[in-house]
Amino acid sequence: MSAKTLTAAAAKEAKINLIEGGRGTQAVHDVVVAMRAARRSGSANTKTKAEVNLSGAKPWRQKGTGRARAGYKSSPVWRGGGVVFGPKPRDYTKKVSKTVRRLAFSKALSERINAGDVLMVDGFSVKEAKTKAFVSLVKGHTDAKKVLLISDAFEESFYRSARNVRPVLLATAADVNTEQLLAFDKIIVTDSALAQLAERTSASAKVTA
Image: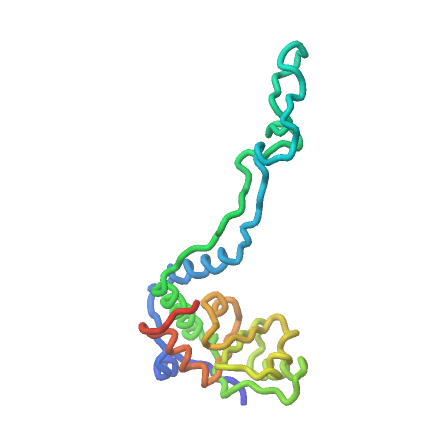
């Protein structure tokens, strides 16, 4: 059975909290920036003149050579010397409140639903755990190249059939995040996942992403 578009009316019947108007746009930006910042390693490191492993002796005597005074070989003005104001290991993570994360998730989901990019199916299953079977399944629902599949759970054989298809991502309704909702051309959701998505958009939901 081919997928059908999840309309705003159907989403409201499933108790998904749809955000209307411009509210939540800044929240989406803040959450996506925070998620991308958290993936940065922050491992860049340079040595200062105090950390460079060079001799502490003066390269030549203070006077009488006709050259400029030099106190140490680790000076930043010399090749191999220390680096002035160079990068040091740091943490790029940004704190975002639970309320903002929930609003961003609801806003992202609402925009994709209003744009007609969310499709609904009964469930996902393949006869055999092969890439060809999985690709045929996805193409039977949409012609989009980048597709996000959301369900309450996936069988192990389904994961195996999908692992070599890079433009397609499998995500459970409990773990899918705001950035993933925005990164794909189409989103296919199972009926069983709608309840969890509705719970995550409610005001009393526990926020995970």
